Image: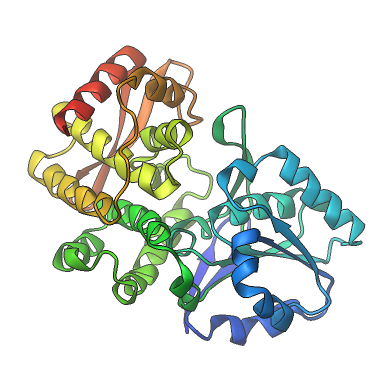
Length: 354
């Protein structure tokens, strides 16, 4: 079991990674206070006995699986159930699942009695390499992703790779999308992926990258907890990716891959991304996109994707679309275009891929 300490101005948290992380940490984390467990229907169907073993006689809320349930209605139901369970300020919430469960569970913990302790137990590759770490919590509203939320750090994150054995191939691909994002920012992760590009669906290989991704994110979050500077780098591919996710029905990780593909092409054309480096990233993204057969999103009406990007919370009041893009190995840059220029550049980037 490996241990990573994450020290931010709001809290000192700890991340444990390993097959023994849960068995080693849960007994002490569940002792001494009233607990509440949040999971989703997919995880519960697979691990009902696991919940009985580690959380006997504990209030359990099972959220229907899927991004569409990361909304105010679900948040209200969770908070209502927490109140009915008689939780106090000394209580602890355990979010067991993927990114949706982690996001809405963390927000529920932040809101209940102005904040109770939260433990994240990520069960998907995407959540293990990215979303469970760093304290971003949110729900979607009005067709905009994560527009209502809070920065609220978990006291611990328990990352157990054995959960990944039950993931379908498309969920593995979703996690690869975030790993490729880290490759765009971290020269060592990029080198490892390029050396094993034929192993992008090999779970044994991918689990070796979890710690590197988490350490990279922990370093960034410690430097910039509330995303005023360096933490914006973790949004590589996400402005256009979120727009595609909201208009196509693709998973978050798949959408981020498309976002990286198009934004890297735009950045190369604008001279923001070094051409040879950008082409390396594009080749890697294309290999990741090919991991599972899928119908390509409908890019015939590019305006609908651009319009969604316009509503992204990362944009400022000047009307420009703001993107975080890779610049060269280990470096990134902020890249902004007026909406009409963004729409034109996105259309060209899509056409270049045909």
